[in-house]
Length: 204
Image (tube, rainbow, N blue to C red; front, side, top):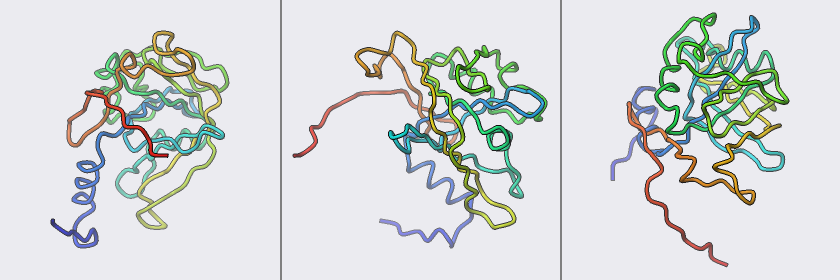
């Protein structure tokens, strides 16, 4: 087995090891509103559950070169709100289009041909194409990594204040994973579908 000291190689090399090892990663498609009212949307695979009491999720938004915050983090911190959508096969191509580098005054949602839909408890619209979306208020934002002058990322912890789940997925308080058709992230340009499922009983 190869032993690698992360301090002995570049940030990019460490990044490649992380995204190639921690797979598959769920994808959060996040919408935010700018102070000028522009609806921003972007996908993030550094994403997971934080807590069920109350329901909270975390999205790590990597900063641009020089520690410059991305639109998603800047908007979410300024407004205190964002909407998280679970990536699924139905809109994965359009979601990928939103990853393009665009100026803040251009809406990725409009460019990708996605349909904005009003939220119930936050001002930020969601996207109708997603089978699951979660309206979130910003519980906490942490600047992590990099240096004190140029952090590497903004960790956004959102408290879910409203779930929206497609009727076809929801039964008896549970989500049908096969009907959701979630898409996860691998390394490079690679993605993965749900694949084979199996069960193992937890020991007593």
